[in-house]
Length: 99
Image (cartoon, rainbow, N blue to C red):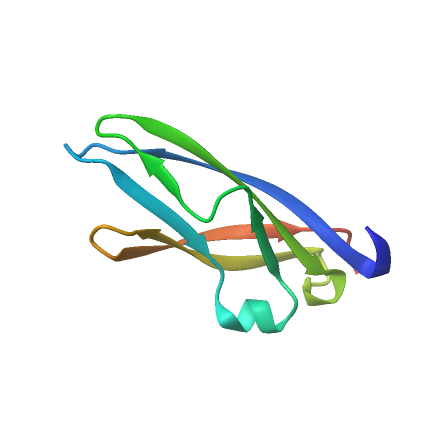
């Protein structure tokens, strides 16, 4: 992308093993947003019926300058179940060209 911005595509597979519908949200830490990381997804949250599964696809845009010399950066995103307000961190790796 232009101006040294990199785009990574991610997929998370979720399974709802409860007996009620659950809704899930993804977010990035404020510190990452302050560094220029942007989360893009088709919906702000994903509902998953009882006993069902879903795939959540999202994109992260970020400046090349935040990557290590090896062209990567580990980032903990927040995976939140909205009914119980339970948040689980999920570490993903941003990838780009080596610096």
